[in-house]
Length: 143
Image 1 (spheres, rainbow, N blue to C red):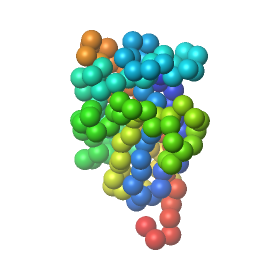
Image 2: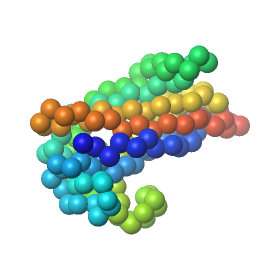
Image 3: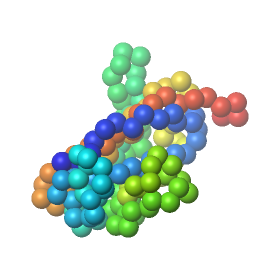
Image 4: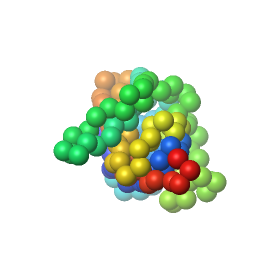
């Protein structure tokens, strides 16, 4: 359904972050991405909800929800019906992105902690797909 590869990243301790991505599906109603296997860009009207959660990995490898760092996103704010292919903030390729979410600094409070941010996309037809961003938080001197 959704192009669901994990995105590996490095967070900054006590730093806000923006997740960007291409949300695509075989039955998306946007334009085809032109990349084999990605399908079409998902449009706002394709989705009924987007939820997210931030999790930190414990010493035993289990993930624990970061208190206060979850919720429901506003589809019209976080899904772009017009793909942004400028390299102003997206430099991965020239195809562009159609998903953006800003996370507060409180999401990544501890240095040397591995964080997972998971998004759950629920489509108007009932299908559910996930997109995950994961990686360590690097410490900063002034934190």
